[in-house]
Amino acid sequence: MKTIIRKIDNLYSDHKFIEEAAGILQRGGLVAFPTETVYGLGANGLSAEACRKIYEAKGRPGDNPLILHIGDIEGLYEIAEEITPTAKKIIDKFWPGPLTMIFKKRPCVPDNVTGGLDTVGVRFPSNEIARELIRLAKVPVAAPSANSSGKPSPTRASHVQFDLDGKIDMILDGGAADFGLESTIVDATGGKAVILRPGAVTKEMLEGLLGYAEIDPAVLKKPDKNIIPKAPGMKYTHYSPKASVILVKGEMGKVVEEINRRAKEKQRDGLKIGVLATDETKALYKADIVLSAGSRNDEVSIGANLFKILRKFDYLDADIVFSEVFSEKGEGLAIMNRLKKAAGYNYIEV
Ligand code: TXA
Ligand code: MG
Image (cartoon, rainbow, N blue to C red; front, side):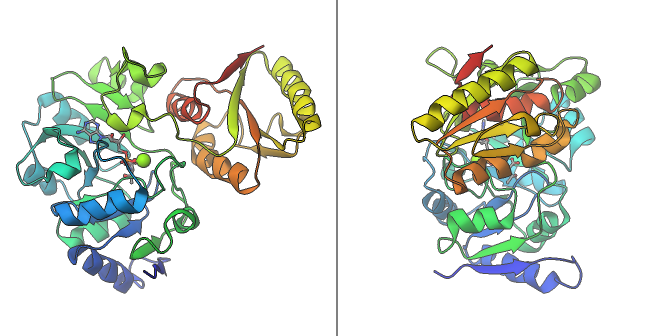
């Protein structure tokens, strides 16, 4: 199949392209679209057959449920029920925005959307292109991240094209995603708010609203038979570039020294070495590819750049990537969660 690519510079003058995309969704096709977190791969979320195509295009395991995107708040009540007071409080504050909530599902939600669970993940994005697309499609839009399964999520249309060209009907190019990390997932079905996946709606923000927030243990530690993530997708550790990623933790001067020493050693073995650095340290490394994720003091820009940089190491054929680590406060928890997965929890402490 030929994948049509439409650039949306202006919501009004390019409206015809969003209408075209909505038509594709209504006819059961696949459209990748921008959101404020990462690009999503959309299909009619009430059609099992359309959703089946998502799993096929991404090569996604069938036990990893999709989330449904709504274009206005009324859409929630068509697909979800038993909205707890805690959940209501959270969505009133953070929707539309980078937050997915887990609810008890209504019968109209197909089994292959939820991977057989009796709950469904729902997200109300703030990105205007995404919202207009969903409103015009007139159905909830099932959309996982628009990457091939196992690759970092796409934060630009070019990333989607690289992974899925020829496998999907259309890509709407709305420029770079603002946050660059997937939405925070919160489960408040039991009355208490539990973070299943950290994102730009942070633990601290939820604590500010509720006075507390719990974190699923699998967010902080490597999942194993005792720590089974509540979000099925969080059990996959191969969330990573082709290169082996190794995190190096410790006092900054020592980290730089250790990475340079190991880089030199590995280069002697003929390997191509990358370093994921920051603006503050970039000039200090001697390696084949040194990329800065931004200033250490600006976690928002590090979050926005992380997946783009992981993809770039792949593109430049790095064999090993040494990475600095970041604070786990605020959005840092999401950044470190994704980095640890990319590294397969591979750590060196100096
Ligand atoms: O920011 C995002 O959330 C992006 C954009 C496109 O909206 N979407 C996204 O979808 O990241 P995906 O499929 O890549 O990640 C959704 C995660 C998966 O880890 C999945 O296992 C989990 O949500 N999930 C889906 N339904 C669930 C449910 N009923 N209970 C627990 N976890 C669920
Ligand atoms: Mg994903």
